[in-house]
Length: 392
Image 1 (cartoon, rainbow, N blue to C red):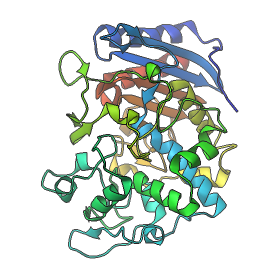
Image 2 (image 1 turned 90 degrees about the horizontal axis):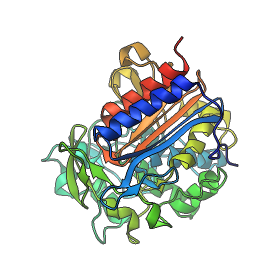
Image 3 (image 1 turned 60 degrees about the vertical axis):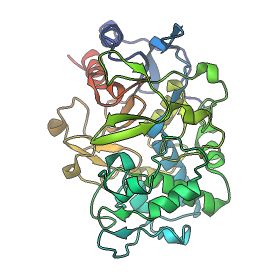
């Protein structure tokens, strides 16, 4: 099944002009080096454009079939896979994770034991976190926990989970929200519950049924892989392996070369690479309320407000479901998107959203971070979509 091809359906001229203007401005002002943007409405692809450079230093233009490191765009794919395993009875939402990982027992700050369940991992309410968001004097740093986008030669997932298990939970599971390595932990649970590798599970349940041939935990054709840039200076520069970059509330360590390392484990929270067109298949599945990959019951669970907007998961007005943020209050978010819109981002420079009320699926992949994640570009893309398609 492949919802979209490279052919486009007609769209209003003012919409195309608005989108082109935003992209041209971002490229010409060097806010982003390269980008691929796609928009679908009511199941039809109405806009796609690749602009700028896939590799600026080699004068290689961006293409619509360019392969990007997905970072956290991996999460909705793995989360959908997990929901399939729950439907099959391989795991349950209420499983104590020690059923599958008997030695994974991080304690609260006071040393008190706590029970983490699968549902806690899915919605980032386990008390775990990422190293980049942890204080410099925390166990995440002293134990050298990997966030899954850095590369430590020889480090296995088993060892990284051991390091993570020796940290402390920020809060009792179920009582707070913190974006975390929980999906990496869940990925190992899925492996142990089924006896299959994470790439096998994702391929069987999600990417193969949707025809996502280019979306993998590795890269088959490295010539299509984009070069990554960081815009922490006035002019974006090529990102180096194990480069520390201010990100969110902390400093993240990025290793663009990780995706090409044969010994890098398949990171459930951020380890895939793929194309914008492939990812649009996931978004259209979400717009269609999970069919045919998961049941309506599973989809309803994924789109429930498991985390209220009080936690501002993607800024004011945003809560969290499973695999994505959930827009609860558009006014608080200062967003033209409808209540119930689903959205998230990827640390290498991507954003996406699905507005089911307006039948919209939008992905904006870039090779430039942090601008492509939380800069002006994704906001301008969002606003151009609504101004061009839905304004009077």
